[in-house]
Image 1: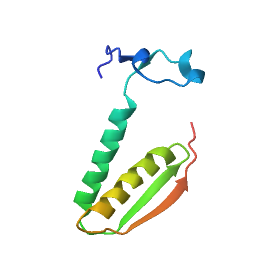
Image 2: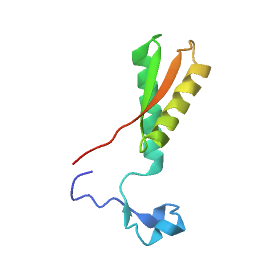
Image 3: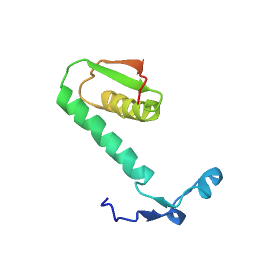
Image 4: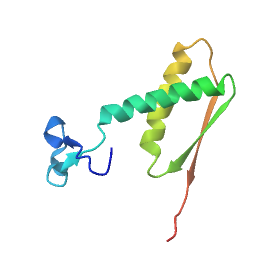
Length: 97
């Protein structure tokens, strides 16, 4: 979206009650994020070929995206012509100003 883009009206989405008053607009719909995550999993599987995949999650904020991405990779592994080994690990990083 461009800076002047207004996003989508929040009334087009199911917003949890505890966020209704805090949320003004939706800039990226959840379905679009899920679709792009699935596409990223497909790209990873295509690019990695038959190499072992080592997936590293940066805690704490990345866990949901990481889990969704690995779910898509797992589904592709189960339904594809070949199975690629996947190892996952986690790292916690502190940021300083």
